[in-house]
Amino acid sequence: MNVPMNRRTGPVPVLTAAEAVKWIPDGATVAFSGAGGGIVEATALIEALGERYRREQQPSGLTYLHTTGLGDRADRGMGPIAIPGLCVRAIGGHWGQSPRMSALAEQNEIEAYCFPQGVITQLFRATAAGHPGILSHVGLGSFVDPRQQGGRLNERTTKELVRLMEIDGKEWLFYPSIKPDVAIIRGTTADTDGYITMEDEPTFLDVLSIAQATKNSGGKVIVQVQRMVQARSQHPKAIKIPGFLVDAVVVVPEQMQTYQSDCNRYMSGDLLAVQEAIEPLPLTERKVIARRALMEAFPGAIANLGVGISDGVGYVAAEEGVGEALTFTVELGPIGGTPAKGIIFGATISPRAVLDQPYQFDFYDGGGLDVSFLSFAEMDQAGNVNVHKFNGKIMGVGGFIDIAQNSKKVVFSGTFTAGGLSVAIEQGRLAIAREGRFRKLVPSLADISFNGKEAARSGKEVVYITERAVFRLTGVGLMLCEVAPGVDMERDILDLLDFTPSISPELKTMDARLFMEEPMGLNRQWTNE
Image (cartoon, rainbow, N blue to C red; front, side):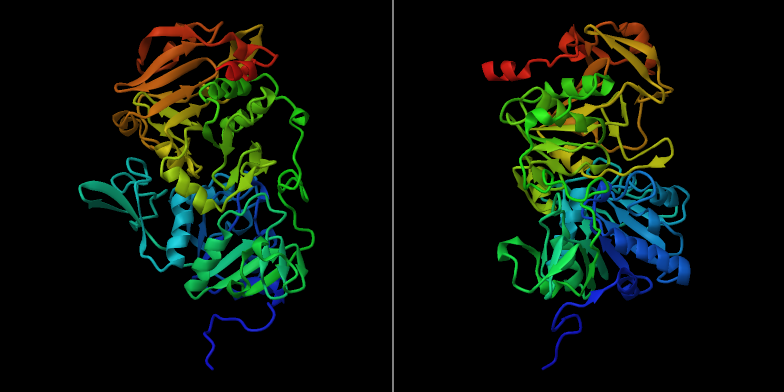
């Protein structure tokens, strides 16, 4: 009997990280699982790959493929393998978690693409199924659209991967399938036949889809785990990756759940956190913005929380006692609970359920979200928003485009200025103690992550919230609708804009409760509604 070349017989090989990365050939396309803060990240394998190249100059000429952003916004994640020569091309949904990778792109040392996170995760499924790619509306009108940059991040990147197509008079973007040669992914436990469970992981991400795509492309699947057990000793419904997809296992007993914890049982879903135990956020401009954003939700809403300043919305909801009145979701897969903040964004405290990431994006892309809370880096008078590239730095979009383009209502949050902004909040009033050096509201954006004109044309409800002003999207662009108490509208808002927004005939003062230490009383308000 002839056994196909990529089929394993017998127990799964158990290798060291150093041995496993020798399976990666020159010129390979390597797919990585993982998200910021070490979530489902095969850290030992990534570090071993970087060490091998520095020692042997092999393998060389790799293409990196990752759905989300890996890292701690410093040197971890993809940082250890951000080496010219080792990498020649990268296709990622988010870049800012690994600044060393972003620097390679910014300095034109590698080819660099940024595609929407949902698109990449769905591409793994398309590749696994043998499809040529996917047709999607996600990205139309943004920098991913080939009529703009086509997702290319620098001058060195010239090949057009995304194509504009028209079917029955409607525009679509075609994203081609990408076949991985090697998968570097992570689970919690492997049995001796290579069957993988993920009981300690905060989320499943797209590890199954990556493994299927790689195996069906004739590649090798290497899985980092914390422990091994006897074959068939785990419940079959707990298995996330079947053993026939796995070519080798690397056991790392010291594997951490995230960069911050060995295993937080609230994040793994094993324990239910007492809501009162969540420490209230300090009263800063970030909390003011998170509070005002939460006011745009309603009981029963299905919501998404984005990374950055918006990740405080879940904590404010918990403080206000309305965390269970709406359902927060995170694009990485968790549903319900309180999404984590900072570099471990993507994990959730006591989630109600956890989906595989591709299915979460199916729901998002189909318009299932009632409201989304997303952060902005820059926005312009037309209501366009940029999050992926600014001040010469490449950040990427993550799930931003999928979410903003398809949510029924979008709430963008950010400070009015950046770089040294200091505010004073006392007794229901806001004062600008020191203005930020960088203006975030500009006349026109060169890099568009969210297209305000398209959103206005489709009738989407869009709100832009800062610590001192609230704007809404209209058919003619931004309209100023609310001003913070204590703020001078001319001096602190209009004089800092190089354009003139329309002003609502019903202009009002932002709710004074936003600027008070005590809770706002949303629980009582929502119950009465």
